[in-house]
Length: 262
Image (cartoon, rainbow, N blue to C red; front, side):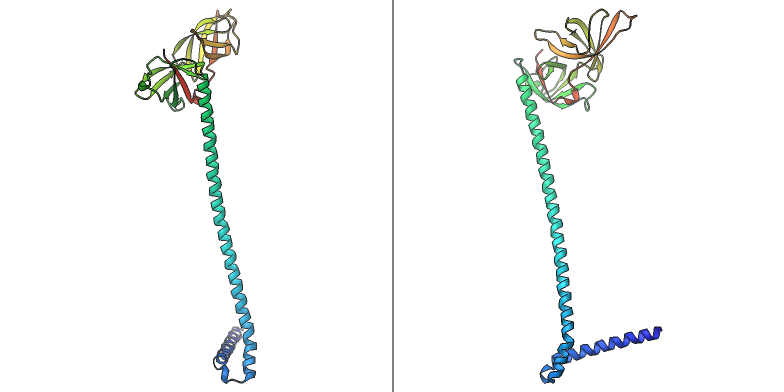
């Protein structure tokens, strides 16, 4: 069986070679050959030529399709890059608008003559606990003890170190820092002790009426908001009550501060 198949393939191969040789001979010696042989050659050649043209056309179509797909992929990549660029521009524009709004808010709330506006360079999530680093310093007239305000009326700390073009601010909520305050609508005097993270505590006699939400102020000619009561702890057996309160601003979200001369 293997021999017969091999023999058949060889015979088919030689027949194909024969026909190709005949066609080539006809094309070469066409002027001297009888007309019927020329026509016979054309009859044999037409299918071959048609098949060749079909293959060429199909190959051209495949190449054109591949080229079109490649062009589409390249256009998609370029479009995606443009979308990403526009998205970044939109984010940058939005961030700039927010920054302008914050500056406008701070500018409209400044009331103290001689105050200095400063941007916060480093916040408590990066700086040491309950501290800020700002972009104003000795060249801007800052000195130790200058008070630090947020939103024009909330006092958060004091300048503790001054450098040429920067300064170190210690927040009143730093552990161990004590500040004189008045608490509640009756303005009961007390001492606020920093507990860290914007938290404070103060101790008052048990009979003083204090409720959650009461304001704590730093006294002065123009009292400044210091904190807001979060919780009142009072045991029946104690003569005093502990007031827990927080600064109304989150130190990690402070972008600008106002510095008031002491």
